[in-house]
Image (cartoon, rainbow, N blue to C red; front, top):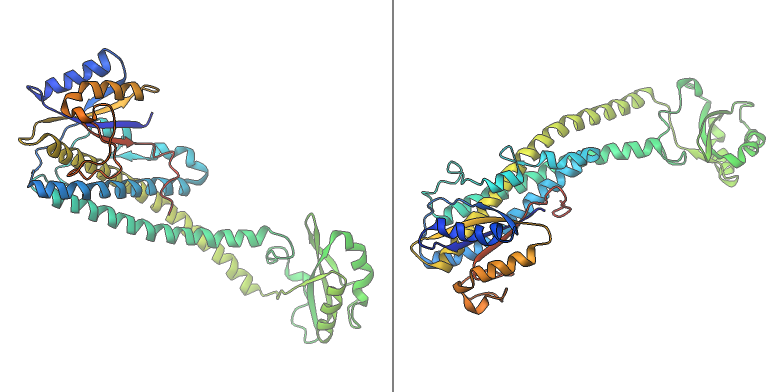
Length: 384
C-alpha cells in the first residue's frame, strides 16, 4: 500500500515515551501499522504570526510541489513509451526507492540550512520547484515537437495511397524525365476499377502514349499506376480521370528533394535518440529533486502545525505510519482514542477548519496529521 500517515504528538515525559506509547497501541497490541520515527532538525521557530502565515503558505506549496512531482513522474512514463513498465524502477529519491527514502528521512542540511528562517527555506523550495517546472515545460515541448514531426512523416509513409507520401514507392525508371513534350503522371485506381483503367486510360485524352501504364504499387484498396502523355493534354487527362474515379496525385520526381527528405528523417530520428537519452536522465534526476523537496515541505508542515498546536517550548515526536491493508479505519479509531486527551471536542473524527490553523481541506484530528501517497508510478495526474 502506498499510503503513509505523517503525524506528531506532544512529548510525554520524553519524546521516546510518546514513540513507545504509539508503537504499543498500533503495533504490539493490534498490528495496524508499521511505524518509523520521523526525524526533524532544530528548526528556527520565529513568531506566532509568522507560523500562522506559514501554515497557509506551506499548505499551498505542498499541493504545488506534489503536482510537479507527479507531473515529472507521469511525463517520464510517457517518454519511456513501451518501457513504461520500468517506471517504478526509475523513480528514485537520492538513489533510494521512495518508501526507503521516506521511512529513513533525514533533513538535507546542505540544501536547506537550518540556520535560515522557516520562511527562507519555504521560499528556497518554492523557487527550486518553480524553476524545475519551467524547465520541464521547455524540455517536454522540444521533445514532443520532434515526436510530432516524426509521427507526421510516419503517417504520410503508411496511410492510404490517396494521401501517403509516394517518394519511397517510385524509382527513376518509372518516369520520362528531361522531355520538353512528355510527362509521366501517377494515378491512384481503386482495385475494383483496375480493368476499367487498363481499358480506358489511353482514351482519356488524345495524346496518351500507348501501353505506357505500369502498376508500381498496390495496397488492400488501391493501386498506383504510371502513365505517360503529352504535357499539353495533362489537364484534360486529369479531368477525365476524375470523371472515372481515378485520382491523379501531384508528384514531381526530383532526386535531390527525395534525398533531402530522407536526410531530414534521419536527422529527426538521430535528434530524437539523443534527446531521449538526455531527457530520461534529466527526468530521473529532477524527479528525485522534486520528491525530496516535497517530503521536506511535509517536514516543514509537521513542524509548523505541531508548534502551533502543542505550543512552546518545542516538544513533540514526529512519526510516520504505514497502515496495514484494510486497517485504516481501525487505526484511525486507535489513534483517536490514544490522543483524545489532546482535544476532547474533536476526539471522534475530523471537523471543519480550526481558526488560526490554516488547514484548508486538510482533515483535522486531535494530533497533527498529513497523508502522503507515494503511488507515483501509477499516477495519471499532472499531465503537461
